[in-house]
Length: 267
Image 1: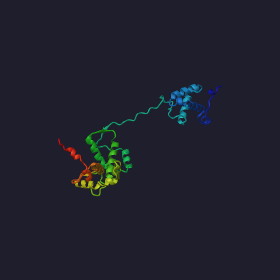
Image 2 (image 1 turned 90 degrees about the horizontal axis):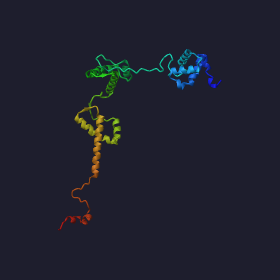
Image 3 (image 1 turned 135 degrees about the vertical axis):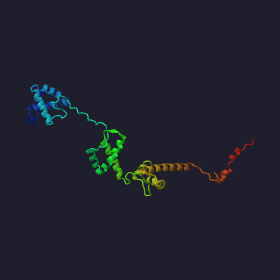
Image 4 (image 1 turned 180 degrees about the vertical axis):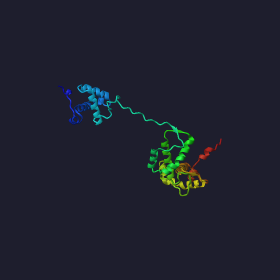
């Protein structure tokens, strides 16, 4: 008898699940790369290797091995006629218009609460949200996500000192640290930028306009003024001034200069 005709198996598996099951497990391990994931090929291979074991016994042994996770769980039960389980594509809900009775789902409200947003706040904002989208008549399939984003933005405004509303600048206004970080990227130091702060505040105090974007406006102002100052300095550097009553050359140079004679034509 050749060695290829001999079978080895686990004694523990044989004692627990039966002799045939233990032998089938060893054959599965031997041919795993070829039969994994295909139940029909598994049966065919085992039938060829073990013609003395009935097909029904092979099926029951296979199911035992699958049940106790002794074989790859990607291989499906032989009772199923298909070789692989095919997952259905997730159903995408159809787009709908919001109506006056719409309310956020339980999952949406739980997400908002986890973000520290009170129920009274988002319920107060619900009417505003619905009115906005009712007037637009837009169809969507993600109203809950849209509502969460809306509430988060409104909550951030509520937590700010001016509650997200435009306000008039005052003498105590100072730009945020982020402003100076951004200006540093343009090679404008905090010290240089701060020189333009008094004139910036004075201008907008007298103007009386209200904004929520004072930091952005200050960045624009500083960049504009700094660029202008650089150009002025460059022009000053390149200019050659001749003050009234002063000569370009000293007395000795002027005395020996006869270039004026070349300008006289005696012909």
